[in-house]
Image (tube, rainbow, N blue to C red; front, side):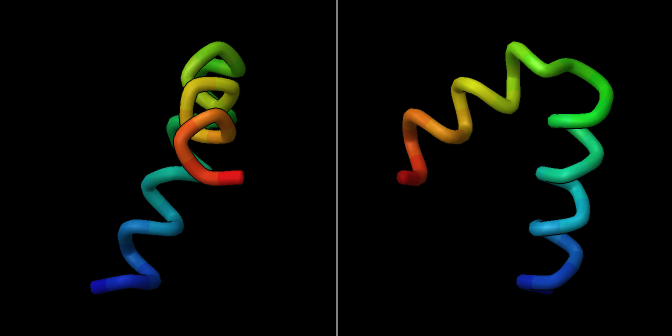
Length: 28
């Protein structure tokens, strides 16, 4: 499930760079 979550994160980042920035703020 961890790998799926990571893939989902990457998908969100690719879909919307703004979301990626938010994730980066939460995860250094």
